Length: 348
Image (cartoon, rainbow, N blue to C red; front, side, top):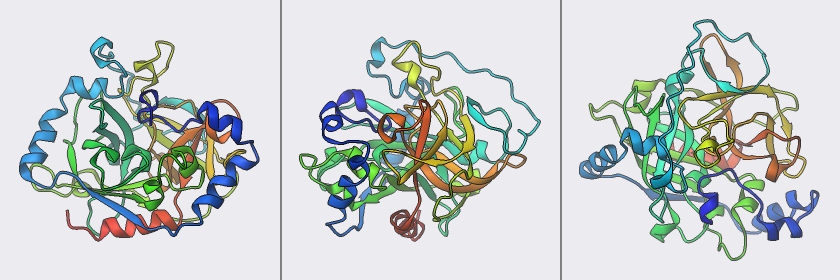
């Protein structure tokens, strides 16, 4: 993955755009990848107390605020987003193309910002969610937030210093930070990068990543600190009303961008399949870089901030097509279910 694409939603390269039409883009990757059997690929993160402590110390307020900046040494530290909270619930089924979430609820604790360091030494961030699980330690995100394509035994394939901050807000850790003990993706990501691209894997529906969090410094499992959201592995329905959350940070590298990653952003509206990628489903939303891995909720209750995670943010209309400012999810199906079952069986 080239430097400008660090932890960004998938974009077609110029070469790929010339080779794939709106019709074949959704068919060729799926057909090619289906020729190989799929399994789970796992990787260890912070497994010692020393490593957990080092990662916790690494993620300072300034480092978190600048995660995702392409030239962090020349990037101003973003100002805090002090949009006032609103104690009143958002009316049900209210469309929202993108705004700071001000309405509280469980989502303020169970969703957070996922930080990591690329193999080239630069820091990045995505979004992630604590979900119901037997081990009370399972987090779901996007696979491209955890690794690139290639040999999983090669250390450079995976991101490092993974650290989840639930309820992240303006460089603070309201509920503490959690290093990651284990992670997993579909084996589709083990593909030789000279033969396919991350876009191909995403379009084929394999951009789910799963994490097992280490306990807090006080020994608590993450779900005992943050609560957790329901999760389901069901087929999408056209026009199903979906609520999406994430931590976009496009303004770090683009002065005309809207978001800096300081607060959690919310979108809501009916979901549609991507014209160029019908396995991906999305709706009107102006989130982009940094929102990857964020939850797409069905049956979201704006009074309590709870819902059922049915997908994770993967890309925008640049890859999947549709109207400008459309954000698409990898819907959770059989592949994601296998990852989830693997994760919830792990000891934290």
